[in-house]
Amino acid sequence: MGFMQRFKTLLSYPLSVVYYLCFGMTLVVFHPLQWLTLRLFGYTTHKKTVDLLNRVLLWCLSILGTKIEVSMPHTLPENVPLLLVSNHQSAHDITPISWYLRQTHPKFVSKIELGKGIPSVSFNLKHGGSVLIDRKDAKQSLSALARFGKKLEKNNWAGVIFPEGTRSKDGVPKRFSENGLKIMIKNTPSAYLVPITINNSWKLVSKGLFPLNIGETLQMQVHAPVAVNSMKFADLFQNVEATIKNAVTLPIEKQN
Image 1 (cartoon, rainbow, N blue to C red):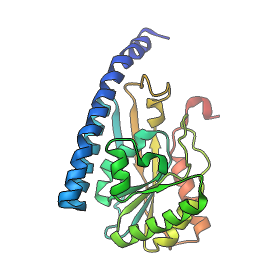
Image 2: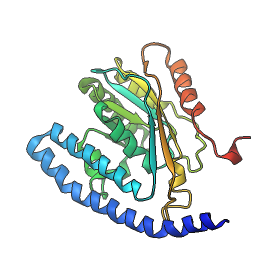
Image 3: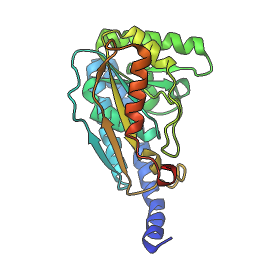
């Protein structure tokens, strides 16, 4: 290990401490703000509060020297529901999608365990329009996703789903599961599906939650939208999975 790499590793410890302090304070401060804005002013003001929360969380990442590169060359349809389908590398995928695609009103498919115990995050998942599914209960998951799809269709919101189910800890995409997306498409017949590729967010946590790596560049590429009724589901699913995975930058040791 060279001098610069050793210095970078050493620096990652205090910067991670500062990051977590700022991250935690942000969640604690915005939790009552969300409660107040939702109770007093309703959805629209609460949504703006959540947008600001995500903006501040991105600022927190800058403490680690993290850069965010976003590619959105295509115009997204307006006044229709969207299904944002992305690979999943770490919890740090959430904030860029939430902030840079905030005009689409992104709502997340999340595991039920996240619905309690996390300031700001749990409140928004429970009260901001997202859906919490119990991955151990297929009946609950499918019925919740069906209701979620109908809500997206009614409000012209965007539903965010990670078909891998769990995070790819080394950047190599896992197999995509079709069940969740299939039930959502069935209940959002006027939707457009938008593939998203995330790169390098796994590198932030490649050593675990502490210390976090510093100086990484997280990339988000938003691909061309596709109408869900433009082809059979099997073809649509195959096309979307290939689009996302073909844009993933594999670690050097995984490229051969």
